[in-house]
Length: 441
Ligand SMILES: Cc1ncc(COP(=O)(O)O)c(C=O)c1O
Image 1 (cartoon, helix red, strand yellow):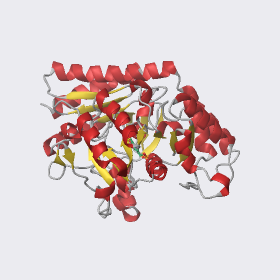
Image 2 (image 1 turned 90 degrees about the vertical axis):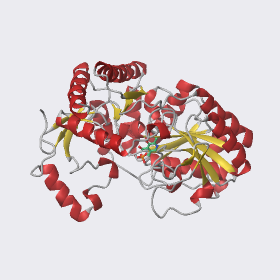
Image 3 (image 1 turned 120 degrees about the vertical axis):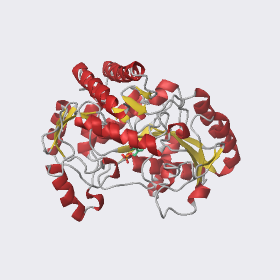
Image 4 (image 1 turned 135 degrees about the vertical axis):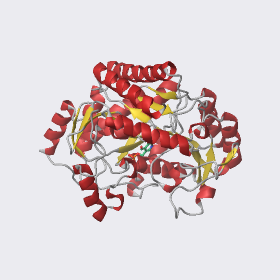
């Protein structure tokens, strides 16, 4: 067996004890917590991470999908090093910002213009503010269980469970963070993914109060279900009918194709939110869309913009340079290779389940996959929601994989990068086979 994780005598455990004194939970991201202690990284190269104890892991998470070429990619490293020597951030603009905006607008047909920010959370928040300013309306509709970052409105019903999620055709708006304002229930209305009929009714009911519908076409926390085209068509047609906007969150799904998931499904949103891969491994977010909508960010005739936006590190040239380098590398053949890696993993896992008569399944597309410890047909969040036994099984799977040099998220969401070789895929499937033998005896 490869790794020594977890060990109370390890350097990771020691760092965690030290971190706990000055950082709640010992780390600043709830998402990197693994019990009994998080893993502290020393370095990473290509598809592999090495921790501070010298343990190695095939990275099947890739910083929750932000790394696409591979860790420490030499092309990005060279571009960034060059920029570092020329300064990292100024209270003035740089050409790199225009270059990245040009590349993204040329790849995404619905985007005529682009504004940058520093994270997907900020991008979603900015898109919601833009929709409210453009329409003069307060309410948004979002999909139950779908993750769009940590803005209160975008988080609504992210963690709904059977005790509070309400009726299937009228899901409750459930605040995620404690202390979220009561007004959330008026300002956010929730629908189920793939429920075209429910979406049409809800959009029409909210009608003249509706600013926008926010949707991710392959939401990971919803289980990466296959999109029913009648659902996305219903969102597009009915938002137009009531004069509201359609915002697509492509923070993750942009890694599925040269033009993102909207190109695959032929959907034409008013606004698109991007982040993760477009920063080439550096913090980033962006809002793109039709120029008449994007106009809300412009200070016309020196007046304040309808939606002022800034940010000390927004469009800093290090991120922009890394983003440009990354986008240039992401050509058609590289997307084919990412699809190929993802297919080998998904098919390999399905093969393992079948061979052992394990009643599990795998969803996903391109470089993304999600393992589910059950065979409920996954259309929406309620199908994918794990009960406590299933949660325990998935945590156990994560640990058995860690012992076998594979790092996968605790809820079974996986993501591969371009540096993943066929030998790495073989390693993953070997580790998964052994881990499954222990987890599902
Ligand atoms: C679909 C989606 N939207 C928005 C976000 C928020 O992005 P960030 O973590 O950069 O704030 C995420 C992050 O995982 C995401 O997956």
